[in-house]
Amino acid sequence: MRTNRSETRSISIQATPDTVLDLVGDAQALPRWAPNFATSVRAEDGHWVVDDELHIDLRVDRALGTVDILRVHRLPAGAYSRVVPNGDGSEYLFTLFFPDGTEEAAVTRQMAIVEEELRTIRALCE
Image 1 (tube, rainbow, N blue to C red):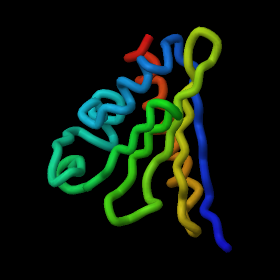
Image 2: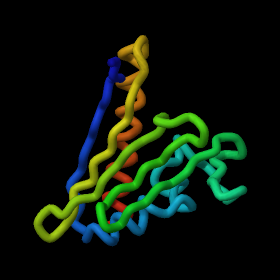
Image 3: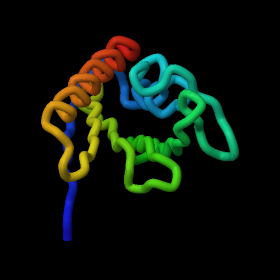
């Protein structure tokens, strides 16, 4: 059995888990916090279309605090995230998987973008 490389980043946010989930669980908010991924989002045939080309599903489970951004028909391709209570605030965790052969420089670039997005989420929620 083979597994892909995973990279997870997290950030502490001085806002309730519900506040964080309201933002990251709203597909139409993607351009606000992930502009490198989505400059526009629209609903189409029960899915979301990012920048008129990428079809995704946004699977939100508020009880578990999970938000998964999954490519339609390409599972398990996507991003997996979770909001958990942290004191009076929240911790937001975001995981990406990379296939074998992904260059280290590409992983580093992508995770730098993720870290920037996490800081944006914190700024929007606090």
